[in-house]
Length: 460
Image (cartoon, rainbow, N blue to C red; front, top):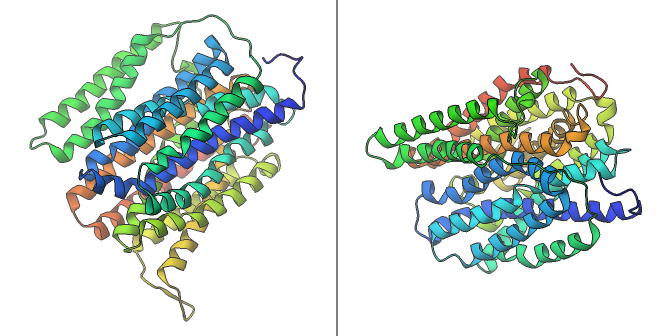
């Protein structure tokens, strides 16, 4: 816990610092997605190779998120948070200076090592500082992500158009440094206990994820199935050994309870599928607009703005009424909206006519993005709070685990989508199949919602 002597008014300053870190992460992720087509052409790399600029962030975050909860228990939340900010700023600087695609991917890994712990660490900090308004403050905290989604695409599109792809990384450096300095002086020290981290288990877990995603990448590159098959086999072996080691270890990376409880298992499944059907596919919307609708990089970023606006409106509304509405109803409503928008994107209308009125492509895509944003914003606060209320004292660990499953889902989508688009070599047909497949998966996932708690007062 944080020292009780700390003035209560200062907790709002801490809240702002936490929000700034999440804002920078969100801006970085969305602006890099907008810059992705330019990065691919600048380094003359294939979609599969340059796709690692996106997927490496998701893989590393998937590894770091559950680990960060354990790190805060050993070293304290303040040290982990400030250390993460330092890594994020350093990684951003190196990315901006990267001379080739391979070093850019490696430097993106460093940046992601810092960014990956922001959400679980800040969730733990806010849960302790605001025990009287935890649901609302956590909802507002995570809603900061959506503000970054509003700023990132527009900022990224403008920076890339006016300067270069590297400017989306340069942007993080001064603001990240300011956040780091303020965090040192404003965030209070938290209590922590001695503990250990099973580095062998961590290596096994990380190796299994990299082997899995690399296997998907090699499916398109290799002349035979031997290499990808070997990588998939390695991933299975590593995760099997990891699970056996974890079952006997006292220093867990993933708490076994969270992998066995019905509510937590359902949440883990849903978060994985949400990452697969939402986080991953959203990374390709700028490429979709550029290749299929022939839009500019700047416009592809601008057209993500309605999605962000819809997300912000829905997320703030849901955050304030979550206690009244419960968890399931917002998730079901958001799921329906996401299913509808994914299906419509797959149909690929060009200047559609509705009720006798012809709508140009820009307005049409903007409308779809807005509806999609409402769906995302409605789901977000519900899925972020659904399990924290069961064990608020472990908010950081729970947030890290659900974030891990989302990132794994997103990384899987990026790997499979880049491989598929490269193989089909027809962006119109390729994106149609991708959107409809994701739509079907989201439909299949909907029943899992009913396995999670109904509302804050219910455990079933």
